Length: 412
Image 1 (tube, one colour):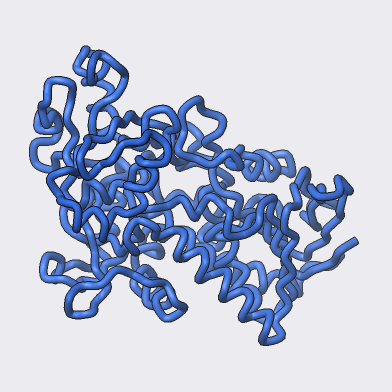
Image 2 (cartoon, one colour):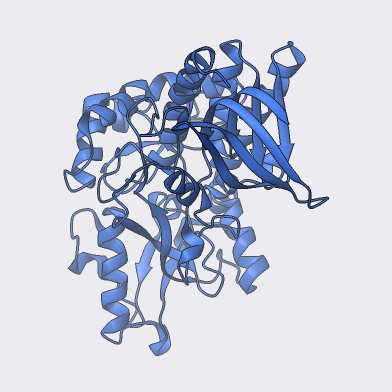
């Protein structure tokens, strides 16, 4: 049996940030992942991460209170407002922290962190690193974990280990059972505190932006162990996924000025959200696209419309949306500099998950959760773009700290 103070299941942004926090608190940490850590689905996040930095003239009067209001409004006023306050208050601190840890955020000509508009805010609030934000943050956090190990703080990675069950004894979670995917051997990993940070459940849907590994087991296993679930009815569909593969076409493409165009060549969002247009909240844009398709205005009568970024020009696309261009070329053979992109809505995010308090604690002693598999309810019925990565780093840090604090109190 492998024995650790804190066992973290999942090596995406929430899991890695929790590992850094727990290791810095001085406890022995294990990170269990069914893929190599930097292959986690967090790396597919493209558009950015929100924070009220007020770093450019267009958002000079932005505040965390405005960020919180937009988050609550976007949630259809169903978010937990105490949790939203924590998310938005800590956002600028976490962005500066990530920058100092090496995340290469895109910059303004003056050298400040640049920000682009996402749906729900109405002005730029989303920090970004071209269109590979999630990947850059994940690599920076993994490097931070390696640095912690180099400094003598124990972090053990169990790569390619598939967790099949939580171990619960006397009402307390005391570890997990995993399969070593390379050998097929079962492995028992004991922990004084167990933290699930496994991401989404998109593969339960026919069309999703989620990776093949996003099966929802990180919600089911805590549930089987006695944890409660919350807000499972709230599923977000992203308006713009590539036809066929349903790979995400970031909201940043519309933030940069991209248009949505139907089969008649109309920029149709004027009918549904004349003020916000393409930057209306995701639920509104997704429903608008499906209305166009169901009423026969899809391109060529097919179930998709066009995302048109041609007018942005080659230089801007190559500078700010290089990943989008590569995906279009690799998966459809389309050059978005010269051709519109065929898109349709697809499942993107689950607002619900394992019910936790603002420190990630569940109904089962010793069992915690963070990130998309958890539900601290900062998103209510609908998440704003740019808030998911923020949730991972804010609550990943908090939950990692709490797991480390609980570990000495838990006995085997």
